[in-house]
Amino acid sequence: MVVQVAETSGISQDSFEHFWSLRGEWVEEPNVRRGGESGVQRITGRHGELLYAKRQTGHIYRSALHPFGRPTVLREQDALVALTRLDVHVPRLVFCGAQRDPVHQWRALLVTQALEGFEEIEHWYAGGGRERHGEAVHDQLLQALAENLARMHRGRWQHGCLYIKHVFVRVTGEGAMAKVEVALLDFEKCRQRLTARRAASHDMKQLRRHSSFSDVDWKKLVYFHETAFGSAIKGL
Image (cartoon, rainbow, N blue to C red):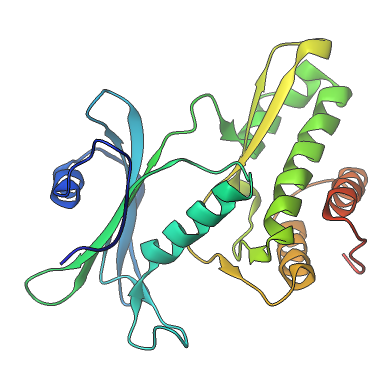
């Protein structure tokens, strides 16, 4: 039986088997963890659109609410739905579902739409994006990232695995006409905390450890985050 399914309109109830049967290039090779296997493939949708399918078998997490285990994609689905409502830029959810296979092991899928034109922020830096667009655009980038994080944190959502590789950016146009967009990915460990401050403190400290921002750039990012968050967060 399929559980906790999110679908876009026009996708029938047999979508689980449809998406499970699709195959594409592995962008994240299957790895064994959490008692199961998880990997991500790039696939093509029914209308030729580029999608990403997180495919898992026996990959679960346990919590007070789910002591016997729950597929991790369902937690990620919860986060994507909530963050979209909070106006955090995340991949659009196309389908999510989980079912038990004949040997009573969970099979689970999370399908999202590709972030067209976006690239990892580290690739943007390495490709000369900062030099090409200038410091004013780079400040816009830091502010866009900070504001996305602040919207997430004000909702008490903690990313839980906020590495720089999970930050994607798209810059269109040049000079004063440049438009900067930032998106966040990979919400497998995302959860709500008791307070917004706890969520923010955890993620910002983690991002500091797992990024290569200069001291000057980090101070700008924290300033933009504090401003958007609505109150200063000490000790970051």
